[in-house]
Image 1 (tube, rainbow, N blue to C red):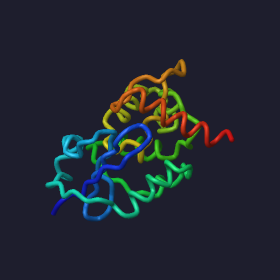
Image 2: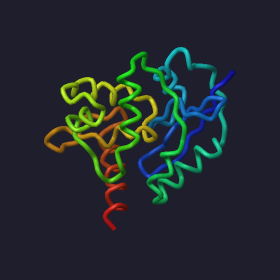
Image 3: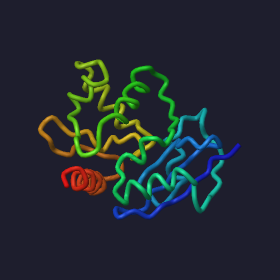
Length: 169
């Protein structure tokens, strides 16, 4: 078994994507080095990387998102393992946050069904291995500031601006 990997050019830099043989995205992040993503993949889902020029429907969805179809990434299957029910549920909830309408960590915890679990919601964002497809960039601090983002605040700012521009026009 192997994991297919590709690097797509985006306006905010290279996006590396790792997908299993079933086509499910196992990791994604704004780095030119797909191998840098492998440590983010749960050990039970890891395999040697096989570079590919294109990942078919996954690549099409990313290009469509960048071209303005902000919901194109929603249908892309993802697979990541957390070892906990809350984390898995929180990631699914995050996929339901509409583009252009970021939420605070407090609101995210409430949407995930555990309003007092703000730190657990923040941990779900921090441990998310499939950036863009599970859009942790859509979560902000309670005061509306950006907070952290594994791939840098400039990337987070660009993604939020891209979505805001397309949802307010």
